[in-house]
Length: 384
Picture (cartoon, rainbow, N blue to C red):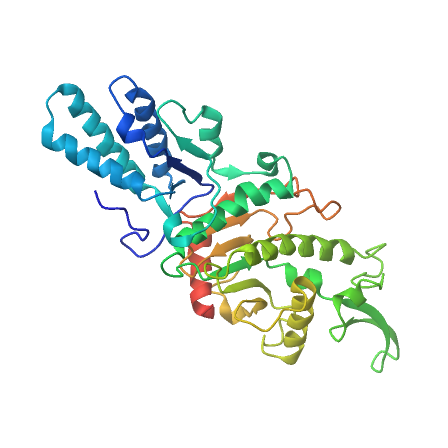
């Protein structure tokens, strides 16, 4: 009864969120008998259902758990003298098989404190509500009571647990990429200014980009991104705030992962703010700098650096590729892909303790999903 390895045969990890983190009491195998077996059989059935959707992580608090199950199985196999012992042996085998089919978080190797949702003994059961919480396909803010803190604990921290599992022996997940097309345009500071047009022989309004100053300075100017005759006021502060708050949540979460397991790269990928210029043009470099400074602050020189990157049209596999690309991608092989309806703008800009109530988080791990295929292609093309 060898432990299940973390990689699948094709070398990729296929996983769906959120995960139930569970463990079992060390003395389960010793005290299991024909009278209390029903509770364990029901538990096995629940975990099998979660394993089918790849939503269960077995947290091995001690090596004794598997050793005791194995020893009990071998002992019963050698001396079965009754029908009852045969039944108990089969249950132990089924339990071990079920544990092997869950993702493994071996605390003895990673020495991390992992939140455990359920610890099985021979009496307690996974109730229907707890089971349903981890069997959902779509997660909206109501699932987290519209609370950013609850979202961090019940969603992001579970992703952290998965990353720790994946990166315990080798860094399988070494990138976090946020795809959000509109980010570059929302953050770009420009204003309409007067300029004399020699050809028309009159003063006209032109757009002037202010990429030689910080976004903090641009926020002080009420004319930034204010279009004449169309907008009564500028929506620039609101747009900046929405992006900043969502980025802050994810950036702080990424930094909270211990260095041993943390993905090396945290990258926000957006549209080229100057589409007529290559992304290597100095204007785009300046723009990246002001974006990164505002979103991530002064980062110390080190191995782990957050970045902003832009996509050229030449980077895109086909027209309309950007449509609906608001995804959080984990790992170059997309070990996990989450679609956020509002992308990085998932925090309420008027109250940073609340989620955007209209947002949804949907797992996009179906290999036939077109968004998944296209994002995988662009990540490989950019050599992220």
